[in-house]
Image (cartoon, rainbow, N blue to C red; front, side, top):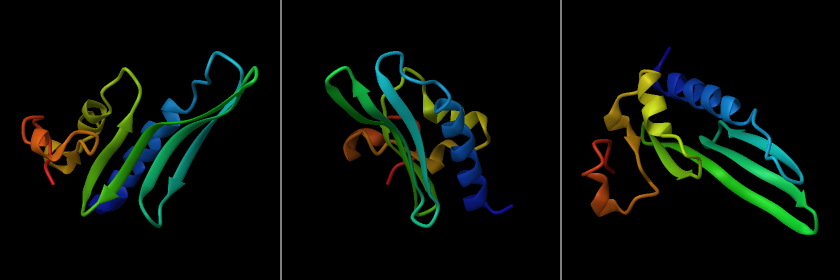
Length: 111
């Protein structure tokens, strides 16, 4: 299996696991979105909590230039560490949610 396909499979496995936990309040669906053509992967909460509309992307990952970019992580877990445990090298994981000047101090990839 090539590197890109391995990264896609790791992301899908991870997001499907995260997507199993529904929010505790309201009538809210958890949508797991895979755009394999553009390599964008999301988990979105979508629905209503009483009279309040809920739309929240709480995980967003991209694959760009052979690296996995963590664009958003609103969980209390380290998605980066979980990806490393799945065999992805730290230098191929970029914290897109951090400013460019901070990334070199994360111990992970820079871009």
